[in-house]
Amino acid sequence: MSERNDLAEAPVAFVTGASSGTGREIAECLARAGYRVALAGRKLDALEETANRIAARGGVSASFPFDVRDEAATAGAIASFLEWSLGRVDVLVNAAAIPGPVQVPIGKLAVSEFDAMIDTNLRGPFLTMTHLLPVMIERRYGRIINIGGNHGMRGRAGRVGYSSSKWGLRGLTRCAALEAGEANVTVNYIAPGPIAVERMKRNWTERARQEGIDDATALRRYTAEMGPALGQVNEPADIASMVLFLAGEGGRNITGQEIVIDGGIVV
Ligand SMILES: NC(=O)c1ccc[n+]([C@@H]2O[C@H](COP(=O)([O-])OP(=O)(O)OC[C@H]3O[C@@H](n4cnc5c(N)ncnc54)[C@H](OP(=O)(O)O)[C@@H]3O)[C@@H](O)[C@H]2O)c1
Image: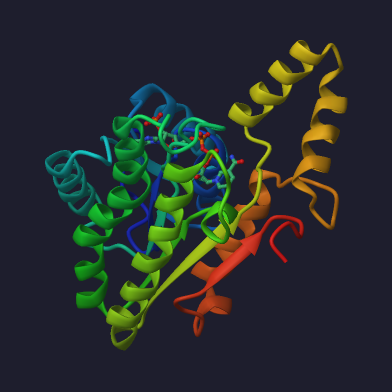
């Protein structure tokens, strides 16, 4: 743990995938908005980097390293988290996921690869919700935000595992919304299109290297292939802003919904 739990009245958010990319941005945004933030992911050093960035701006966070595919580890980490937060959890953001291989069709995709995507991207959120939704229901307050993808709103050749996992997450979101609404718990799904995180930037740089073009041209070509009406990919802050909205008063009466943020690809 990187910080003392010394803002006893502040709301508490639990964010998976907080060790990099969009999850890290969401964690930092929630901390800036006054939440105490539990940072979840496998890599403790990367979680601590997020914690340091939060602390540098006066925020409070603590790191809880675990693998979302591991049921016992998830239960143990959430038990430690609830000790830290004195039983309080206001917001759960499930952002941890793996993209899996791209352009690999059924027949070529290893079953183990398919399983890894389902286990991380769908079963992982189910496990965190299994342990945190009852706490929210008991407290009669909660906001759950599952980060899906626009590949969960359409099919995509060569992405069967990823797309299936994100479609499944929509089902999990809707069922939980119906189960928990009576207890004033909302459950929603954000469906981003491409986000300019380090992992994606590395892909664009690699493409630029292979095609002998510069990074900016590679990004323009990629964006043109995706075809967003607005002609641009997401920044992590685009997703974090929606998380803040859904977690706040604006999200009070929104549940079971899928909000697409992709510049107008799925229209
Ligand atoms: N980037 C995009 O273009 C894009 C587009 C649409 C949707 N999304 C969705 O947005 C979310 C964030 O994506 P991103 O690209 O920003 O992420 P990213 O930078 O690739 O980071 C993935 C995060 O997931 C965590 N994670 C992966 N497997 C895990 C496991 N088994 N247990 C615990 N944590 C695990 C990683 O932590 P550790 O490595 O520390 O375990 C890391 O914090 C994901 O749900 C993704 O599907 C992304």
